[in-house]
Length: 229
Image 1: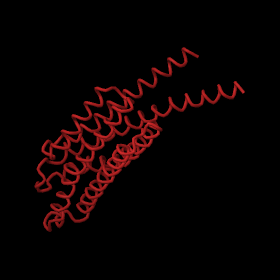
Image 2: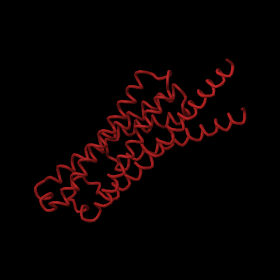
Image 3: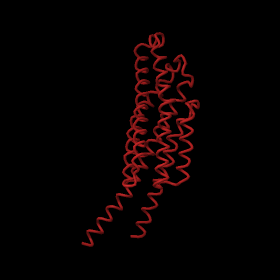
């Protein structure tokens, strides 16, 4: 009987240890991929949403690479959300968890939607480059992707950071200063109105910070458990 209890407790300990590690790895993969994607997009496409599309002739390969990497970042982000919710378990607050999950899914949906429109522009440019520019299709698609990426997606990432940081303060799954930093950055993203071109990078950088901390803390706990047992 005692052996069964010991085995059961050992399984619970391993589950508690593997869950944060999985969240950390998923968060790191998401952050690194999204930082690369956003950097490629922002160094290739002019900041002015009213540009004439000159970049399509020289930098379209960079955008194609970024768009091909984006789905993998999205998969990692979904995994990150799922594992964090699993980690919260019985301590999960229904209100903030709903906002956390909803904002994360909406963020990802809008990110994919803007990527699909951008991919459509690149496809049409390969088929009918002159017509794309002359008949206003490029201007329309460019405006849509700009609005989604720099306004709505930005706001949802801020809401996600705010809800995650609030959950962090309540459950102490990461240090208090990280949660407070997340709240400050989230308010900045919510109130920036897309005026700062590189502001969207704050979100993956913050997720990367939290993920690295969770991974290191988990490895430290594992070493302590091995030393104690």
